[in-house]
Length: 238
Image (tube, rainbow, N blue to C red):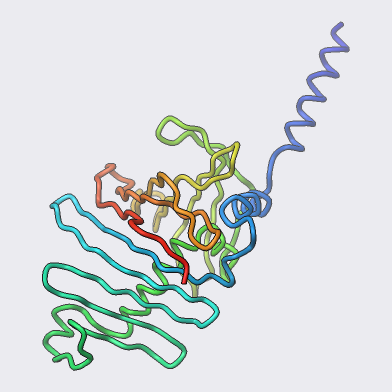
C-alpha cells in the first residue's frame, strides 16, 4: 500500500509538472483567446474611449488605429475644445478646433506637439494591443510563470522586462487560469519601493475580431489609491 501511494504521488507530481506552462506558452494561450484569428497585425479599427478621474473630470477620445497603413489618430473633446493629433508615414498633423493654424501659446497650453502625438500612438496601440504586443522586439518574456492571488482571485502570471532602448519598467500580466483572458496588468519601476500602478480590466468589447478590455481602472501599487478609469464606449471596424 505504501508503495502504491509513493507511485501515485510521483505520478501526480509528474502530471502537475507537465501542466506547468512556460512564459511563451502562457502568452500564446492568451493571444489565442484575445486574437483567435491572428488579426492584430492587420488591425484597422475605431475606438471611442471615455476617461474619468476622481475629481469628476471627463475626456472623450475618438481613436483610429490602422496598422497596415501605419496611421494613428486621436481626437479628444474636452469642454469647448477639440484637439486632433495624427501620425502617419508622412509625419504628424496637429489641429485645434478644426484648424492647423495654432499659436505657439496654444500649442504650449494644450501640449500639442508631434512628440506627444507619437506618445499617444505608442500608449494606445500598446494597451489595446495587449497581449499581442508582448511579441514585439525588445520584450523579454520570463520563461517561468507564477501563480498569484490578486484581489481574492488566483491567476497565472507572466513577467516581462524590456531591452534598454524599449523601456525599463517591469510588467506583470495576470490571466484567468481557465480561459487565459487577461484581467489585470501591473508595472513597477522599482519593485523594492514599491512604485508603479496596477490596472483592473473588466468586460470585453470585440473590435475587428479582437477581444479588448471594455473598462480599465487604474490604481497606485503603494496604497491602492484610485487614479481613473478608461471605458471603451463605442467600437467599429474601418
